[in-house]
Image (cartoon, rainbow, N blue to C red; front, side):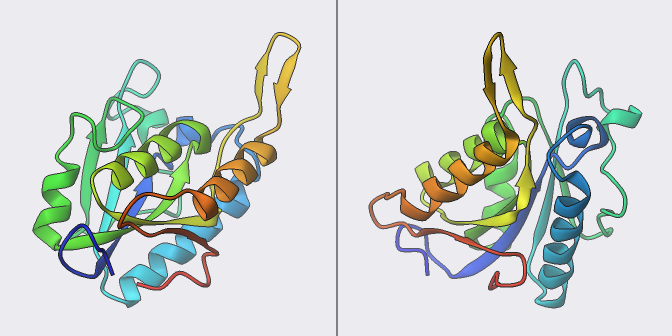
Length: 183
């Protein structure tokens, strides 16, 4: 139960699981299957699902790269939100949509772990939402900068550990596997 925001309704945020984002990500097929499973479970629980799609230089609205990966298809009642920044909250109607559906707890899955997932998780906590990161339903690419290399699996593990131990006053953040998420 959220202690900063009224209510106890969970909403699923599926962030940037787009063709151009998922290309080359770590274990993308497994992650897409886990995201699909969380979507199924949210639908079964009648929890709101909000689909976030990045729109920018490399992901132009309507382009093949901008499309969500198969088999992830929103239903006609699920909200699509376009974003231009890493956090799904910045410059979007996300917070208004969460208020409209009465969400105080956010379940978070998608890509990319070290950019949009992390920024959206912190943005949610900063705004008083409780957050559960689906630990097996987010991914990224291996980062290479000159001689420095950070493996994608390590980036995913780092955010999972961070979300398990991060503390915000009067908010609850946690991790859960796709099969363990409670809506």
